[in-house]
Length: 395
Image 1 (cartoon, rainbow, N blue to C red):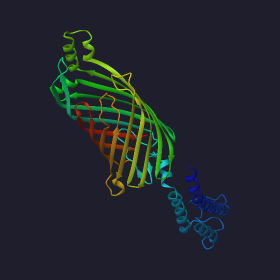
Image 2 (cartoon, rainbow, N blue to C red):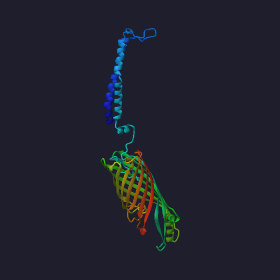
Image 3 (cartoon, rainbow, N blue to C red):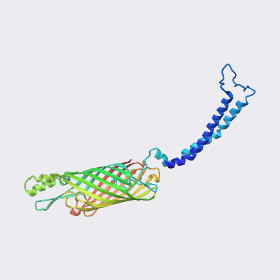
């Protein structure tokens, strides 16, 4: 506001001075007329001229008219109007937007507006609410089936259908600090009888708390640090484990029911760094690295070191043309599986996000993802395809 007032003050002061002179001139003119007419107001029964001002001697009235015109000349009116226009147009656009209540979303470097990550892992400290819905399918799933002697009888193969929902809210409490909370859930189920028997039905619900703090910022580079805590609960129904337990025991015992259905918990904690760099208004790069510890489901006494790395590149076509679209390409590698799979190497994910960029405080993204999960068991890999729809609104 101070900058705005400073830019407006000179023009407004000039306009006020000239407007005051005009008003004072009118007042002086009216005073002259009053002094010369006294209390005379004129009437239908008197002369139309004031006393002492006959038709041939109206110099005072004419002088009054000339004086009034001289103070309110068209040049003076145009000058006052021009000063008012200059006062308005001299206000910076950012100041006008601030006075109008427009939100200034802080995710811009070097003129480039960074596209939000569909999982919420952004470097910038902002206030926003996010909703994400994912639908996917996993291929090449194979589950071996063993007899009483431990020999593999057959392998059940098929596909898995996966759905995931997430809701996240992040609140910036200062220009450099923000806290967030996330609640999410996912479920998976086999697409045919074999996979349904082999994998059953499972669902995971999660609650995450975390925060981000700005470490460094320049015109082109931004760096922040993060801390996150995630607690998850796995609820499952596993008919294959129930059948195998009955076969192993040779009878149906009360403990077999524990293998048919149950729940497990999982805790994870991590710290990380998030960076953003923009070399041009149409291009930006991001990097997210995290490390921490966690225990897989069904292995509460086992703690593993987790690590993940995400690299991304965003292109804003609105800076190159009039098309309000952007493209976010990302690659992620993650070494920890919360569901306890015995990984041969890190899980890899490729994402191709198409974003609407017509509004700076609103983001709508459609993100196809290709996932590869390599398993040590049978030396196979599960390939998956996930389609994510994410909506984010900056407050």
